[in-house]
Image (cartoon, rainbow, N blue to C red; front, side, top):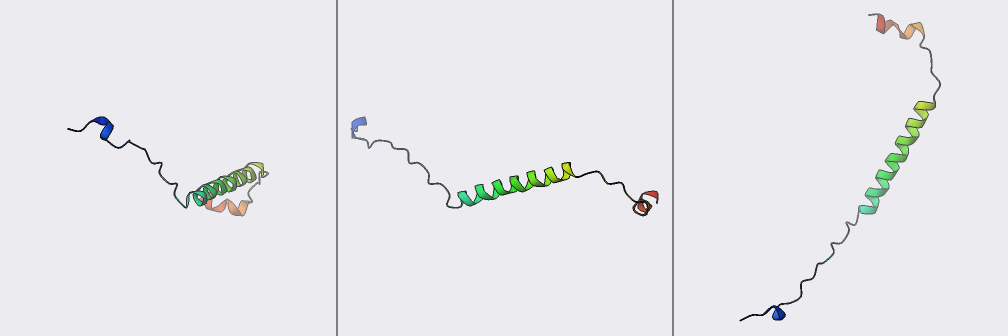
Length: 60
């Protein structure tokens, strides 16, 4: 007959982090920086009035 004291202790092994996790986090951070830079440039750009030659396609 087995008793609970005869059983080995239950241990929870922590999983090892993926070796490319740092690369993934770096790429996501760089994407956010580039996105913020592009949005800032687009929102700070002065409005440009279109020439009439560019409006030809809109008339057709």
